Image (tube, rainbow, N blue to C red; front, side, top):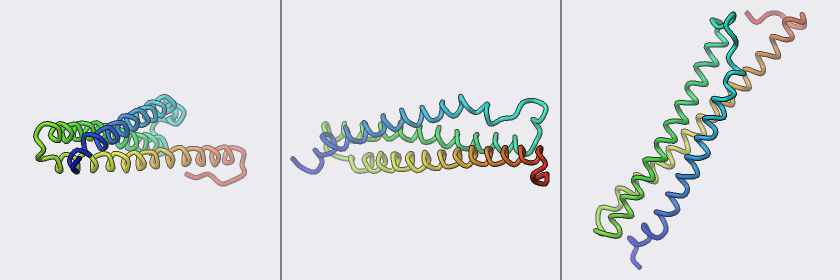
Length: 145
């Protein structure tokens, strides 16, 4: 067994399974956050507040990052498949595709973490502002605006 055979026997199944699981988790997080986004966005009367636009902007950014990470994970499956195919049939030109697959799955992971971080900041800031608003209406603290 030479070094090239490792691609079809180890790298291909491992990277493919990792990317499939990653796509499943990222898609679940994306749809879960979309389902509960209505809890963050205020109803019609206060729709023009800066807080609402901030929430919409940060949620949109986090969703875009999650979508890009899902696409990159799919592209990594494609690249590792091409590397394995070339390994089995031609034994040449494998390195570029394997490198691309690994680069794409790493980038997908980084974007996923960044998207989750932006989403977490959005939720925490929303909760803090909600508590401050509650205290403002009770007269405990001065208004923010």
